[in-house]
Length: 351
Image (tube, rainbow, N blue to C red; front, side, top):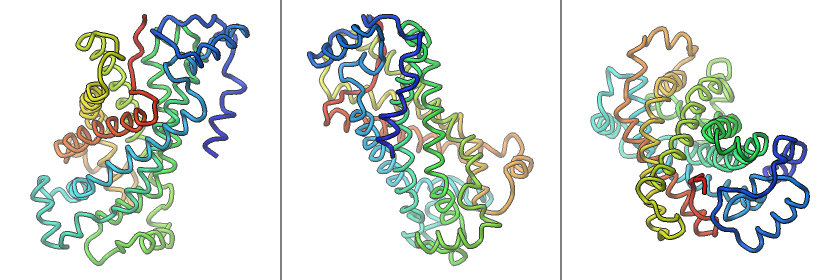
């Protein structure tokens, strides 16, 4: 299904009149022989195609590999920080009881044992692997799609808008895949010991059997969108901008002249800085989603009860978690791409 989407999604719109600007891109320093052949074909047709303005052409195979890179990037990192996530969710749901990251972890372990801080690990791993697949794979797809709609000149001049539109579009699909698993995860992580199943399939059955109260499987989709779409837009926009700034103002030699370890270090630093911004932008909605998992209140009711300051509970913990998480996600994603010969991400620097 994903492969079909990538192969057919471009066909009706990839070469509108706006993109018939010629194929002589000013933005890439060099091209491989195979890409020159592809570009020669495009030139003969009079069409500029964003998919082929890169050192590695963005074919269907490229997008599918990016999907797999996203699976590893998001699935592994979210799984690794499950204890932090359990503490953060409980701090948001019951701030009177859970005060601070390490005191919360200590309290959960005292009440439920070491297994308590790993509650919800399986829906976390499955849900965020699916989300990462669509988040990263579709971002690459939509970035090229919107670039072709805009045309060669506009896609560079307004590349920030392209990043925002591409990431928002990708996240719509990514969250639809994540939502049922996220609802199970939050319910498992925030329920008192013995009040709700912690085993994945038992929790899935319980959520489905009580749909009137749990609103499973898509009851949290709109709040999830309100959390994740701004988060992902910030994540990709600021990553692209920061990595571009690094290569334009700090590492000013041609990107290809730096070793892979240096490029991946730049990737991690850019991802970490973007993650801090992401945490701040999306935190109020994250608090609402966590509290919705605890009971049957609507997002509006929760916001009314919390007030403008209450939605910021647990922000410090989330900044630590998301900053590190985002840096590692980009590092894993680019490491995977590098291993498969796709190169590291960024920048869109005009020649």
